[in-house]
Length: 85
Image (tube, rainbow, N blue to C red; front, side, top):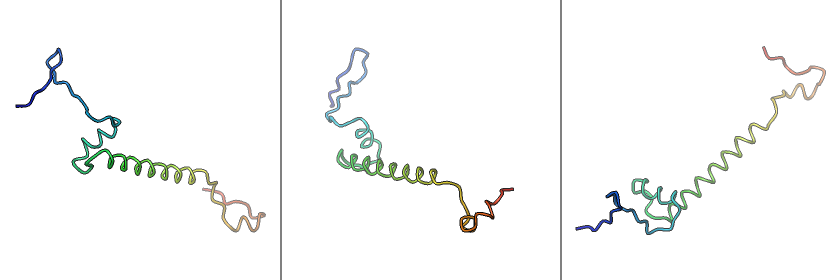
């Protein structure tokens, strides 16, 4: 039989033996068994953070670039820029 401590309302008291951050505990609990321990959860979080950083840098670099200017307009400024219809 399992001994379960109850609080004053009769609800079971959860005691975490791990001092890991909550997000690491959440990953281990809800990964469906793919993440076995805290060490691998930290690896997954690190890879996720790197991918988010790379994605943000990509989006930032594409949004900073100016409008498309045809090479003909750069070579011959008298032609001017094309007019959008």
